[in-house]
Amino acid sequence: MFLLFLPEKADLETLHEVYPQEQRFKFPEEEVKRKLAETDLPEESRAKYVELLRRGGAIYFTRKNGKRVLLTVQPGNKVLEEVR
Image (cartoon, rainbow, N blue to C red; front, top):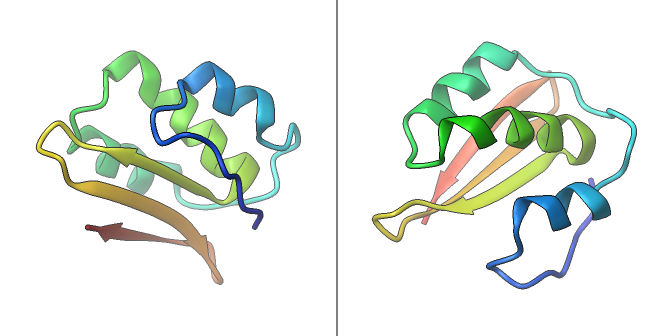
């Protein structure tokens, strides 16, 4: 996993540019899609978030209700969700 220090409001296209290009992480994609469906993220951007998780091992976003969500790929290809 790597750390990116970007503004919290960095747009999705900026994230695509700075994340590693190769897919380094494996996980149950349906589980992540289900977690993203429970958010306020636009449906058209959810596939991009799945791709970023495969490339970088972590994604971070803020729901409309202000809750911050961090999804990370853990050993054993499990996805951990932290809500703050």
